[in-house]
Image (cartoon, rainbow, N blue to C red; front, top):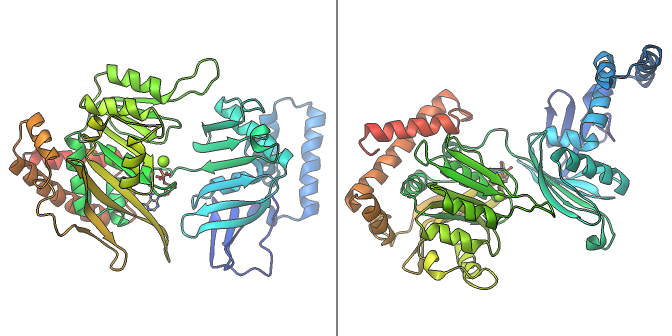
Length: 466
Ligand SMILES: Nc1ncnc2c1ncn2[C@@H]1O[C@H](COP(=O)(O)OP(=O)(O)O)[C@@H](O)[C@H]1O
Ligand SMILES: [Mg+2]
C-alpha cells in the first residue's frame, strides 16, 4: 500500500470504509484515495516487533506450513501477508471496494477506476512494469490461462472475486511498450428487473413489454456502449423466461446468472491446441432442444450462426456493442458479418442503453425499438429533460401495431386480444410486486432473481395467463 493514512491536506467530497480494513476518500479534483486503516493504527516500532516475533517463530519452530505461520501472526502482519502473498497486492483494496466497478491499470501510470457514484477517477497508485507483470501472471495462473509474449491477449474470469480480467501483455503487439490490464467487477448479486425499474432504467411498460416478448420467445438484442448496462439488462430479462425454461448461454467470460435448473452454461476456451469458439458452441446449441440460445455478446462472423438459431425458432437474447439499433442493423447486414436478411426479419426487438452522469452518480436509461417488416420504429423513448420514458405517441397499441406479434400468436395459438390483455396484466403485476417489495426492503436486495421469477409467474397463473 502506498498510503497508510489519509494525507492531511486532503478535502473529501465522499468518504467511506471498505470492509473495516481500508478508508476511501474522493476529492473535489476527482481523485480516489484509498488508505490502510489497519496499519495506520500501528506505530512502526510496534510493527517491527511483530515481524521479528513472526520471524523468530518461523526459525525456531522450523515452520514449513505458510498458513500456520499466518494463522499465528499478529493482526497487522497477517493483513499484509494476506494481501501481498495471497491477494493481489495494492490492487486488492480496489477490488474489495464495491463502489469500484472497473480498474484500469497501465504500467507506470496512476491506476484509473470507474466509481459507481463518481465515474472515472484517478488514484495515486501506480505499478511498475515488473509489478504489473507479476500481478498478471498471478491472476492468469489462478484462472488457468497462459499469458506470454507469444500469447499476449487474454480475457478471463479470475476465480477468487469472479472479476473479468482483460490483458494486453508486453509483446510485439504493444510494440514492447508497457502492459495493460483491465479488471471489471460484477455486482455481488445480479440486478433483478424490479431493481432496474426502481433505478428508473426501465419503465413499468417497458418491463411488461420485455416480459411478454421473452415469454413468447421473440428475439431481443440489447445495444449500447461498453459499461452501459447491457449484460445487466440481459440477465434481468432472461430471468423473466418461464421457470424451468431450457436455456443455453454462450459467453467469453461467464457473467450472466440464471435461475432455471435447465441451464447449460458454457464459455469459450482460447487454448491454441483445443480452442472452443462461440461458433462451435452455437453449433451444439442448435442440436440441443433448448428454448433459448443466449450469446453473451455477438461480435463477428459467428453472428451468422446466431441468426440461424433465431430462424429455427429459438428464443434469443444477446448484447451487441453499437451506439444504436440502426448502426447495429447496418453492421450485422454488411461484411464481414453479413447475416442472412431473412433471419434479421425475426429480430424484432432492440433495447438501447443510454448511460449518463447525474449528481447521484452514473445512471442508465433504456429505450425500446421495434424492427418490423424491415422498418425500425422507436416504441418507448427517453426524454432527458423530463427524465421520463414514454410510449411513442404515433403508436396506438404496442402489440397490435406490429406484425411480428401475429407470428407469436399463431405459433402459440393465442389471439392478439389475449396477448394485449396479458401485457396489461403483466404491467399490473410488475407495479404491484415492485411496491410490495419496496416496503419490505427499500434497496430491493430482496426478492432475488429466483424468488422474483417465482412470484411473477405465480401471479400470472392466478390471473389465468400461464
Ligand atoms: N441500470 C444501472 N444503473 C446503475 N448501474 C448499472 C446499471 N446497469 C449496470 N450498472 C453497472 O454498470 C457496470 C457495467 O454493467 P454491464 O451490464 O456489465 O455493462 P455492459 O455489458 O454494457 O458492458 C456494472 O458494474 C453494473 O453494476
Ligand atoms: Mg457486457
